Amino acid sequence: METTGRKWVFGIGLYLIIKGALNLILGFSMSNLVMLIVSVVALVLMLNRVPYINYIVAVFLALMFLMHVGNNISNLGSQWIYLLEGLLDLGAAAVLVFEKNVKAFFGK
Image (cartoon, rainbow, N blue to C red):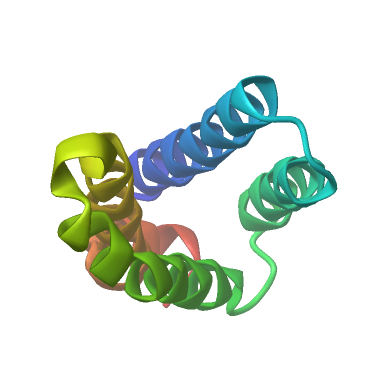
């Protein structure tokens, strides 16, 4: 179970890094650079099982979804990809909080 949880955590962290890198490539900005750095740090902290980091990352992902969902839905024709990204973020947050193997990985 713990090994499967580690794979989930690694996959979510890798998703965050790839998302940050793509955002940086598509539109360079300091905020995109900071998000990429935060994603790398989040992955390292999660793999090192820092207490409650899975909840912190999950709350962050859920907040990002909530902040952008209205705009993404209202401009669905041109921003459907961002809505999909938000749904992936929300799914990743749910996995970090509720998935039993992730809980086992973090020792909860």
